[in-house]
Image 1 (cartoon, rainbow, N blue to C red):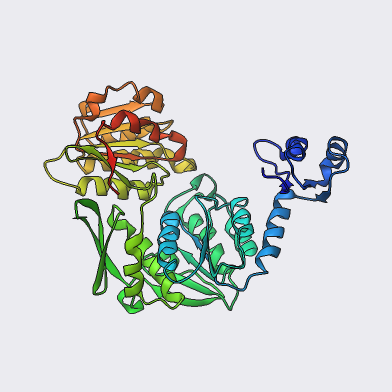
Image 2 (cartoon, rainbow, N blue to C red):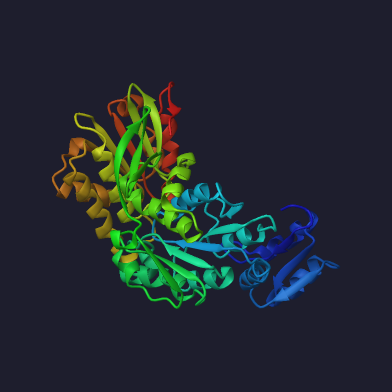
Length: 429
């Protein structure tokens, strides 16, 4: 909290009303609190400017919406089951060559983060990129209402947050709230590579990308350039090498180029602007371990489809090289969790990876799936926590040329990185 800020008493795992007095002592200029807590707040914070509302989270969104209306610039909303942060970062890199851009910081993409992002808009900004996340129905609809985008884009639809959304059909329905909530004067940017997105309805104007008919399409292949491992993206007759590892990133690159095209930037010029892109920590970040060995740190988040993409990437890196997949459990899969984790283990075995370490509450299920698909026990290890895995000796990891870290944030797989790294490690991408 900084002095002269307005403090919203939000309810979560803890109740923000319990911190109202502390907020005032730290310099808050006023409070937004719920009417049900009025007597408590007034007794603890007398003579403090106080706005009482029915729901403080809704009030936060309402204020952000009112503030957003002060700006007539293009405001582009990005959501999707995976790739939205990478797409946002790619698009920011592209657009900064032409505009003064404001973009979501980190993963401030929920009902609290999006309002905070909007509050940082200022008159100098010419374009805003707003990332939207969710784990239940209605959240994207509310974020769209708050943000009032002039254009919206959905990267991909894949199984995620199934604890509440139940199925991929549910995921598609929840994500489609962005398109259905757009103003008729706004634009929906539609990725034709994804059949779920291609058939979504919207009152907005439509701009297509992803196939040859849309005139914005391409292909990708993993490659080395100047000693750096990444992916070469060929868009029509133009190509660029980026520090993004995996051909699945083609959707993200095409999405960034589609936004650029929407704002008048020709795809070939946009592709060249992407040369300045730097990869993000924890998102297929390539770390050199010495003697040609690599660690792929993709531990920031996961869903079944992104985990399979990461495993395929690991397998494709080279023949006659030993590889190790360190996989953490995936959160919020609901009733599908058990089978989804077993399926992941089965894919590890089918890809004939050299070794598997599975971690987390569902790690045993990944291990079980690998065993059922024929992966020998000597190639598998399973631990409940990262702390248990830290007991593995450094020499164990030195047996592998390529190591992948992939799982949901709850696993904290990044704690393994110091154990895996050698003294001559350096970031190469």
